[in-house]
Length: 320
Image 1: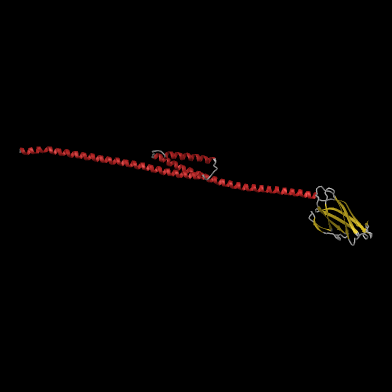
Image 2: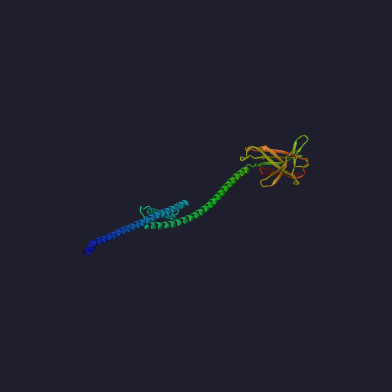
């Protein structure tokens, strides 16, 4: 019996030792598990932070791209108009300042969600202002086009008025020149003095005797002086002479050169003969010529002289 008790007493330390080992093992496993858990939690936290950082950077790049597109749209809009009003210039300033503010936020070394939210809000506001800016540019373009059209029409009217004024001036100048030329031409018209008509009887001896007996004369003599005229020039002049017989018919004589001439009044007249001579504007000329006819009936003869489109002399003779 004593031996058995000895054996049981001898086994007690072994049991205790095993229990201690078991407890230590459990504690060790718990520590390892805790460490693994903490490591997993730490890695999870690190993963979240990295994901958050990556999301922030992606958001930053997206906003930068939006800003670049908006800025390009703004630069394009600015090139569409040259003349800006005061209101548009003020919008230019505000848009520029807002772009600069957004760019400063996005260029920060580290960026937070709040920064990105602020930048996004400013970009939305910037796009709204840019839309208003572009609408105002369209209004200005329409107004400028209207003004340009009105200016073009006004320029056309002014040009038309200018052309008319030039035309009127030219016409007045031409009219003045023509008037001066006509005046000079009229002033150059010759004048007749000492106008004389006489019947002439030629005797067998050749002697000529003036008479007013129609039955006795065999030619009619016309004589006159062409007066001097400083407005005329020395050149070959031509007078047109018309004689009307008592019955009103135009006399046509042997060796004469009859015809028809226009007058300045617009009428045309026939003439019996033309007389050419070299005009002397300083001293004038004496003209004399005879008309022969086989018969000079009794009555009154009228003789008109024309030059330069005017009747310059008129006379008559009565043959009995």
